[in-house]
Image 1 (tube, rainbow, N blue to C red):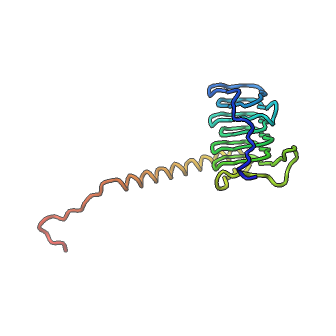
Image 2 (image 1 turned 60 degrees about the vertical axis):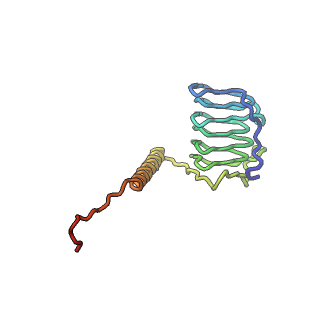
Image 3 (image 1 turned 180 degrees about the vertical axis):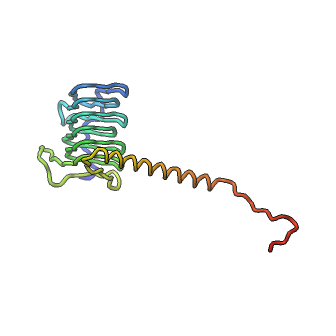
Length: 190
């Protein structure tokens, strides 16, 4: 239930959407699909049980995702329906509700929306099996004001920058040569 049974369907990739590629419109696939580029439209697996969608770190999907197995490290703007297995990797961002049967969530994964467990038979379940890859990852709560979310993200980025500057200053101070204080010769210290 926790981590050992990931229920991955296939490791093979039948189709690839390259980094510089932009697809506009809904698409349906079967087997394995890796997206490195951008899709503006819904992405749906023809046979959910036998399908795997891999979304890389720089990839972006703007639309509904409906697959059996999903490994996400990029951005999805829209709802996700993963009927068997969902892995949210550390650099993924989801802006929409997430419906899953089995979930693995890495630290750093961001979900702005609800996590909704759905049993394998399609009914909403009471006890979601969640596999944590490490200590519990923070889930960003849904915020109704997008401006507030952007402001909070800017504040976090500014704090990280201040922390980096402070750390660099500390390192410079630790490695800087220390000046010696020299007493003038021939005089007695008082």
